Length: 285
Image (cartoon, rainbow, N blue to C red; front, side, top):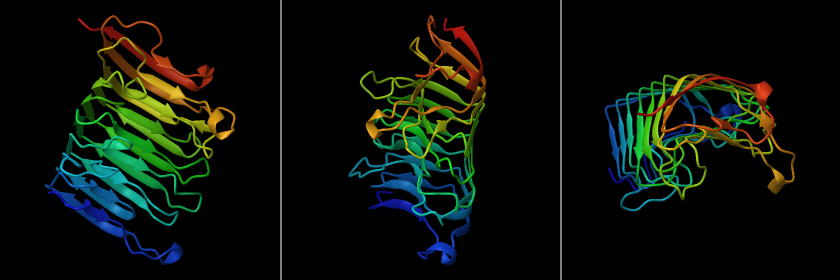
């Protein structure tokens, strides 16, 4: 409680390249991380991590500094590892992360083709925060050259968040994101917040040619607005590059919304050949 930085830092040794040794077989369970200044848990390099039955609450409440997430997966160098990482049966409540994430944040852009594969699973967790307009869950994957990333979100509930429910910036060439039996309820309720939809896809990094590789395996959107559940930003004029493109979206989505109409997803370019979504729209009674 009220740690001056992170509640727990998981990082291995400080050696570079082949001399680096990640932390191994780390278990964090039945813990409460409350009002820490920076974030609940920072994960830099680990081979085997289990976080279960934990609560991450009010990060940054008394005196916060970015990122202020519940958990942040953020390797600093290509030789860092994120292998067999599991977060399950945990809650993330009113963390103050705004520029980053209020719940779970993963930034893997510092990894490259020399890095070991990434494997992260988030199961049976709940994320909620009305304390910030930040995104509930962020996946910012490796670039096109790798490493391979497998990111599973399963049986997760994201509800009552003022900002985006999920922001995913994943390379179709190196990453696979599976969102299974997951519900986004009352997300992006703040009209002034950036993004405008429950799920927002980005492809603005220069090292990602095609974003995507995302499977929606039983996603449910419960929305208070008749709007697309998904939007992508593909323009890269600001970095002097041609637009990105979609590299594959598939699966099943159910949308429950009042008087739904118009587009169910909004991609800026003609990506019809790369989208294989079965979308069921159920008018809210």
